[in-house]
Image 1 (cartoon, rainbow, N blue to C red):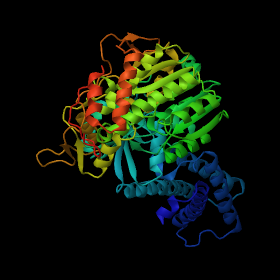
Image 2: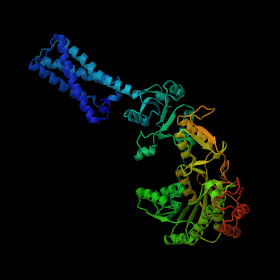
Image 3: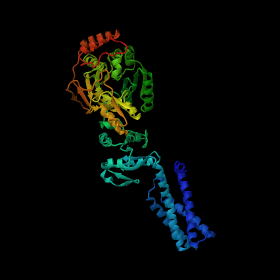
Image 4: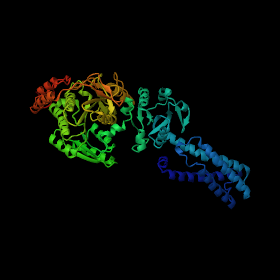
Length: 620
């Protein structure tokens, strides 16, 4: 019955409260006369009935005016008794004055009894209800809310609406809030968080800090990581303001928070330079980077945005999403096709008079390219060559290649193919044409297809084994939106043939990342048979490096953007590179894997393969 009452709409709960108070007021009026007169039927005259009804109506009106029914019963504290006391005092005063004015029999002790009984019952029933709800909530999960600001208070109210979580107290680093009481909960400082978690057996910590800087969130998470409890977070302030999420939609701590990397505000002029009111094409538009580039580009009001992808499903998904976001009425054209089809590329570029190209289409997964060498070379190298030559022919103004840190001293075919793609654009930049070529090199992006992060989440959720290739393997990480934004800005800086390198911050050990994710999930790493989740090292995959690099040399220079550097690296003249590409094309045509490797080794790519040829179809 209590559960049914709690699920009622707010106005229905108020009506029920009015009926209950009506009964209590009438009962207390009768009870005070009954005790004083020792008569089972003390109210017999019409005047007494008139007084009882008038008293009840006036008292309810007073209760409404002083806000007694605005209080949410499940959250009331002893402070509600002050409101009840004010209302009952006025009610008792009305009783005395009415009896005096209308000459109705009212013993002096009856008024005292009425005041006492009404105060105890009207106030007591509310506290009793609150205590009953509290007892029911004891079966829910006890949590602490980290952050006693507006978001923390809203979160407490939202959680109290359900029986899943029971907020026990706030933790906040603001010394001014130390030991204060907010909405019935005590505020503690983070200095006491370890003892509080142990004393109250806290199983979850809820971060209510949607607007705090990421570097500060990282500090907080480092403090929470050793605790034996799961850490969840409310949505970001942008998601809350836009209405995409509500305050009580708790989620796992994002890896962006673990990186602690604050984004640098973008340069609006650089963002708009090659995009606003222009025809822009994104190859690989349905991929992780390509799709985010499309979102960013669409917000910059291009005249036409062309989506090029060879995957029908990926193209359909990004086209559908972008059309739902298209508030500026830019024309969006989804084109299904492969970058290996040079004639189609030329027709597209010339027909639509494309101004800017972002070339994100590539086979990027290291083991997959090692197992499929010929297709990797054809797509990554000759696909890029096709795009570049078609761009030159169509007089495209700007061409930006999305490259990778694996192109630096590559140990795998994928990295070698991307470095060769860079050399192609560098060489073509010195030829006589109007297209400005540039390359943007960066490391891993969080949430991309094949990323370790979703894999770790799945493995941790299953409480199975988290697989890491090597205890010392280290990678750079960046969020997809930040990487895409920087790619656009870097492309706008280029004067031709520039290789830009994004500031990825500090590299992270993948094993350390796995440990952090396990700990923040409220679990422990299994050691010597004890713990929840085991970390298993499976060994490096074909072509995989322990450490990735972003620069071939050490002579990078700064640019007008704090997060973008320009690498000054060696290149080949187009005449020499063209000979190597012809030999590579012939080897791919005949599936001569040994010859492909020899050409890659003889070309100044810095290629040093870390494994034998392991193509799954062709063996030599």
